[in-house]
Length: 409
Image 1 (cartoon, one colour):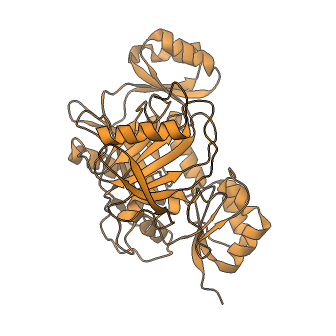
Image 2 (cartoon, rainbow, N blue to C red; image 1 turned 30 degrees about the horizontal axis):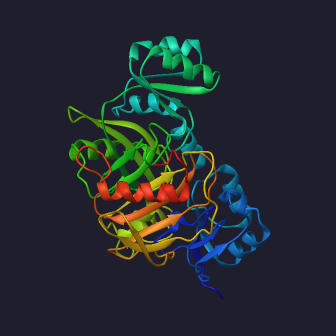
Image 3 (cartoon, helix red, strand yellow; image 1 turned 45 degrees about the horizontal axis):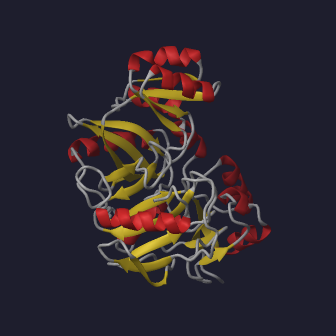
C-alpha cells in the first residue's frame, strides 16, 4: 500500500518550492519534470479548488493523501475535501475572509489594542470622501485585494474623489498615510502558541518591478529592519489575536515602521504567503515554516525549533498589456556584478542550491500579473530602499526579454 503523504494543490508549484510536499498543480512553471513529486493536472490558471473537482485529482488524493494544503483555502474547497474524506490543512476560511476584509480588519484590530493607522470605512462615494477628509494624505483600498492591485495612494481630496468615483459602491477603506519602512513578519499560529520568524524588509511599489504604486514586489531577509523590537512586539500581539480568533497555520503581518521608530500594523494575511518557499529553502529538516504549519493541524510533531530565513526574492509583475510567450523554462544559475544571469541547469522543485540564483518563470497572464521571480541569497536593497545596482541591471534585462518594447528601458 502506498504510504500516505501531504499534498500541495494549487495553480502552480511555487508555494511548495524547497519543501517535501507532493504537488498537484495546473502548471509546472517551467520546472524540471519530477514524476515522484510534481504532477501537472488540468489547465493553466485553474484554482486549487477547481483542481479538486477533477476526477483524476480526487482519485489520486483518496488513494495517497494524508491531508491537502491549498495555497488559498475556501469553503468550497473544504467541502470538496470533506466529500473525498481528506483533511484540509488550511485555516477556517470564514476566519480568514473576515480578517482579510480590510474594512473589517481596521476596527477589529484597534479594539484588540493593536496599533493601526487612523481610518474610515464604507462604500466608495461622496460620504466616504467626506469622512476621510480629516485624515489628509492617505491610502485607499478596496475591502478585498492582493499584492497592492486595489491599493492607491491619496495625496489630495481631488485624488480621493477620483478613486471613489471609479469604485463607487464598492466596500472600501481609507487609512492615514504612515511615512516609513514597510516590513513583514511571518509566523504560525499553533494550538498553544504563536511562532514568529525574523522580520524582513517588504519591497513595495518599486516601479522596476510592479505597476502598482503600493504593490508588494519582494522580500529582503538580509538587510536590517528598523526598530526590530517594536516590530516583533506588534507581530506577536497580532499573531496571538489571530490565534484567539481561531486561525491556525501560517500568517503574515504587514507593518510600517515610522520615522519615530513606531511599528504600525497595516494588514494581516491569514494564509500561506509569497515568502513561504524562502523559509523552506532556509530550514533544517523538520523545522520549516511549512512543517510548523502542518504541526498546527496535528499532522507532524511540533519541534519548537526557531524559524530562520536567509533567502530573499524579487517579483517582477507585467507592466504593459502584452508579454513574450516563448518556452517557459525556469533555471538555476548565477550572475556577475553587471547583472548578467548565466543559467547552469533547469530549476527543480528543490529550488536553487546555496550560492546560486533561481529564476522562476511564470505564464504571462496580463497587466499587473506576475512575470517571474528571482530567488537568491544576500541583500536586495541599499539603505535608501533602492535595488542594488547589479540587481537593477538584472531586472532591466529580464524586463526587456519578457516584456520588450520602447518603454521598457
